[in-house]
Length: 280
Image 1: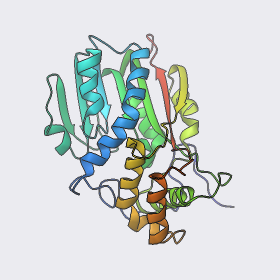
Image 2: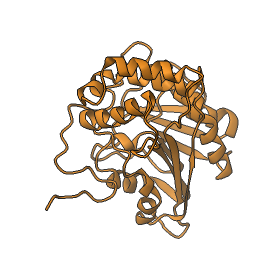
Image 3: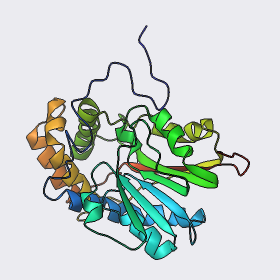
Image 4: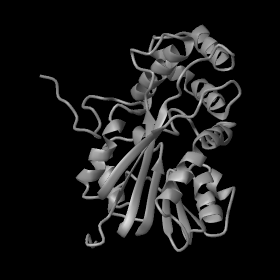
């Protein structure tokens, strides 16, 4: 019988060559901040609308995990008027390059033992846990960083390019990308639909979730984001044997053509509240 991982845990036997930012998507690679910002252009309005809907605003102290270039952290301060945001990342060069009043920066690995930057009304992580093993443990750890009455908000990608999707240059390369990233850095989105159950298992209450999908259109931020992502992950994509260089190039052209009719991977956002009675 094959061993199986629990939801949110690393599948047994998976061997990775590195981690996000090491084997792929290195921060020191020219243009990586621009690629991240294209993703922000596609998803930030969705994220901010959800955070505002949850009541995030003046007086809140917030933790932004895997903050990237800091677009959400700065918008929380500038638009939502929160008191402080602590932006955490394993590489903070893009954060320190763009300081902002109220923005704190911490270079840290959230999966390291002893990660405990304080307690917050909001703990937010977007497109982070899908790249890390032991996700169930990490979700529980992030929930522990909430003050009573605080909210944990987690977003990750959900794959819409399943085996039943029409075969196009885009779907072939997208499927190869997910496999290549899983093989090299451990990225796994198969568990992401279980987010609500994983949040409830930590003891959080009023758990809910939503899915949003930015439209793919020639020249759009999300189309440019995927083209840049495939370029940076090309070695991992080709190593799967599912596609060759010509197929990747064809998929990039397809994204920028009027014939493109496809769904981008969606973003599932799930949230849950720490009960007022749930004292630390």
